[in-house]
Length: 124
Image 1 (cartoon, rainbow, N blue to C red):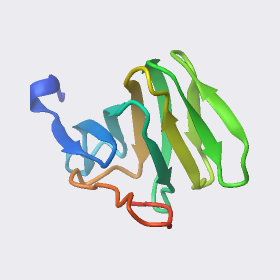
Image 2: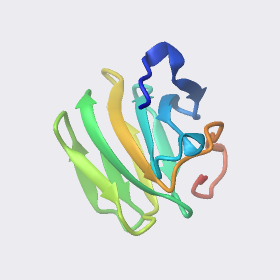
Image 3: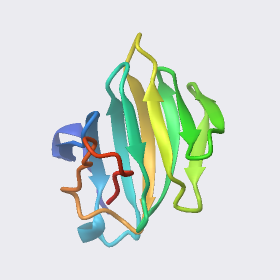
């Protein structure tokens, strides 16, 4: 059995916020669980080519915008799943942090961060 609290999770600055990674590849569970915060007013250009990801919003508001311009409002209780390695923008509203519980499959190693200074979609 694995039991971890926040102080034991691997915490990384992923580029536009913090990711507390509670389960990693080394745990041999087959997936990663993260508590991710997104800084207010940020826009992240993302695409996971090696992972599928699902995110459940638990606090704050924002939007997910697909590469072709479809826009989805993200509020507490809304989940979005990137089931086709979807290129997207994650945008946090300017008033507060956006908080997500995210699950990755296959699992993350743990130190992955985004490169958000490029015109390309950041990936890991």
